[in-house]
Length: 219
Image (cartoon, rainbow, N blue to C red; front, top):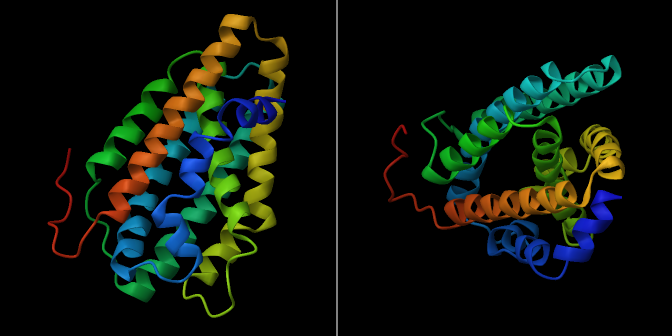
């Protein structure tokens, strides 16, 4: 339901801009600079850490046990993703933790602040992050070749475990959307747009990163 509304409103602009972002295009066609990918992986783990916190804060505000259990499961799945990034890629490429970039800091600050708002707003943002992520990965499935150095990343991101997390969030958000008043639906779309812009900023930060840049300072 809500995913259909998103595609109808933003499929030809915001979503298209994210899918066709140079970072994602070069990642899929095996031309992305390894330093950019390392920086992306580094910042992604920092982002996911706060995404997990956001999910658990939202779960604590839920009134029904089924939603609490479902969100706890999503958080666990994201923990698995984060551990994979840290254990596998950080070891393979010698990546250090470092600090958040400005783009990552702004994005996670938004996530954490919205988690203390109305639950439907927090759920909309959590789902928007996952929906965008899944949409981008799904767009790559026919372009990733076997010899792509980032193939392992794609295989993990396209796994059933990740897809299931998105379905869990989608079911909860669709419930909110079906009961929402028009002003609340407008707010949900606005929150998706804001989230998508943060995603674009995050990708810009990773794509424009150079090994000659200084490591991000703590914010």
